Image (tube, rainbow, N blue to C red; front, side, top):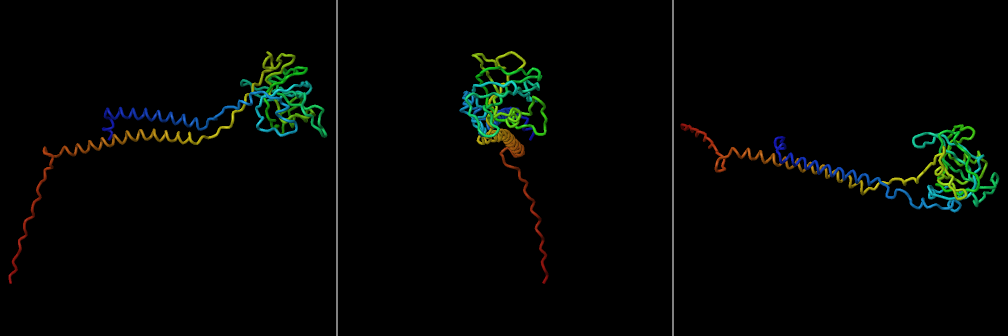
Length: 287
């Protein structure tokens, strides 16, 4: 069998079969990649900034449909209501998020016991490597633009210390600041004061911008593409099977030719006549 497979034509056939199988395997990988690829990497509607007051209401639940939405709001920062969130990464370095309370102008005011006269929202203004680099927020009326994000969960059994918080948790921060707040926070991308952007993205300083992009949608399995990927694998194996089958058929033909080589020139086999056994002598029975 191996002698037949080592014929030049079958070696060339094997190379061709391997090449075809390789192409089929590549097609299988491509189809498999498409089976887990999100159809839309991000929702373009979230990148069009909308007014915070019309997007989310204080005291309401944070709806998933408004997550990652770019929003705008007018208001002022309170420098006495600023905390650092430790353990945050920026370009591979661990540091702190600087989060400041922002009083939203024109926001609905909550009623009831413990409600403040203004409605606030935590704003992650930027990242610093050293707590000493966390400067005070810009003063005066600002036009804030940023990405609206849901409240984080506080880290249990952790004592953050003065001026610190375990996470950008609205439930934790309103206890520190004693204010009424929106059920989420904003990662600032622009802070415009008197026509000038004074945010970390525009100012050269120790406070670095966060640059939080929209989260891609959860990947879903495309079963049709997954079926196609398995189908190409079968085709790859079938190409090698065809080569093996052809080699096997050629090997059988070689065996038949070798067997036919023992026949006569006229193609008939030489038969040796069988010997006739001697006739048995019958004894005459005497009466």
